Length: 376
Image 1: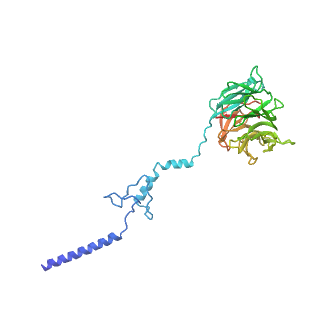
Image 2: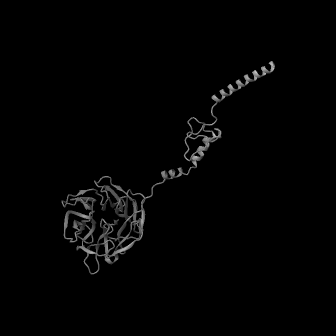
Image 3: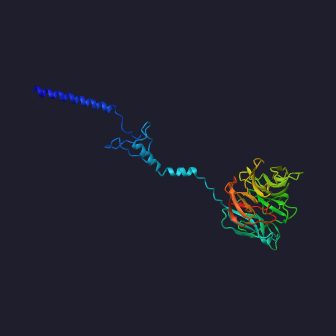
């Protein structure tokens, strides 16, 4: 009995020692694999196995071993997640320019002859689609600000020549200015006035610049006491820009003058520039001027005369520039380095030029004074 009792005491002592050792090991040994933050292993799964990872995995716990299985799986899933691909594409892809909207009018001449039967006004969608003849025996079109009417120079059969105003579709033409030397029209933004050049010589546009009131009577004419060609209203109607000469000099370029008739002209450029057109916000004027090789190119200048910059760099003539209604684009006509005439559009900063309408020849002698026009 004493021997059995002794064995029992020894067994109890050994069991106590074993339990103490296990407790010490359990409290001091590190976890084999860290648990991903915020994700608890499911019941019955050992912590040394990968934990389930959501579509947007949390970052591994700081200080965790990057070589453990859970970390490798997390990175593999993140790389293959489709949601990340669009972000990469968006950050590296340049935005596409918006397609031009509205419509554009222009003159076409099929012969250098001055006979009006070979001159006509065409219109197309501003993206270049659906070009079509609008008015025959006519040229120099300009849309009204709301796009509902169009003014132009016409010489219809058995009718006086001068400035006509018609519906935007060419219907119901009315003689507004019975003047065979008038040219180069532009509508004020409120639709109340048309500014024009009363040329002294019919075959060479240029002369006193005047205003015609669009009140249905067409009797009120105001002389602005400046001389030049291609006058255009500023957006607020307080100024005109035009191609003219500096008084008492032979210098030609872009000028501005008030519409109050005071004749107080101011010089913007001295580069023989012509065909100016204001940006819709009134901050810039785009125009054509000779480059070093004497071909015409498109330039832009700030409304105060600063910041002159060239926008086109062709080896031919890029002419008749005009802003889109929102100011983001510039339309112009180009002879495509002397090959054939076409209408182009580019971004307002001169980037991304592209052809819209092919086969659009202007008059051989008057292309420097003809203009494009856009409407909503």
